[in-house]
Image 1 (cartoon, rainbow, N blue to C red):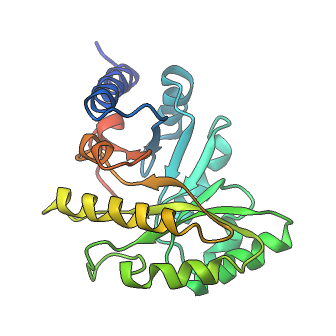
Image 2 (image 1 turned 120 degrees about the vertical axis):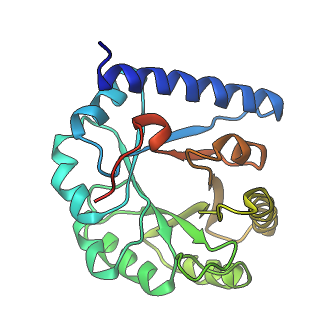
Length: 230
């Protein structure tokens, strides 16, 4: 009888095959990072993905859940990918490698303050609300450039690129818009702003995201199976 671990192994092989096919189809030669989204996943299953599949990066959505599990994980790079409240920054600043959901100067200032306190340069991605959806966080595309110039003044934050969660309808349209925005910002070469990463694409659209330049894929259910979110 197959175990949960067996399914993770099979799922990972399928994802890797699809990623490599999409890379070849779209003439991508660069590295594309598979980030395992671990929301509600048992740490034992996550650790299996790390040791058996070679997952090098995991993504956590909720501060409280992450704090309850982080000491159970094997050594791995951790990205915080969920909406982050300013009063929760202090709890994760010492243990996450990247915060992908930076969406305001207020949050950036708090991250900068706590990073300074522990003598750390915190890597971040700026989250863009590419479709202007009211239910989602992220800076508007029109406000992004001005925000980046402000972020460039913060000494303990290092902007490494952009992140987005496109809508489930017209997904390709908004992936294209995000790629164009990413290229436009990259071409401006803003001092102290590094456009190394474009994080977009999840379990249902990661192959399409590869077509539009994503180099961080945030994959949860396609790897770990469907979960009942609590």
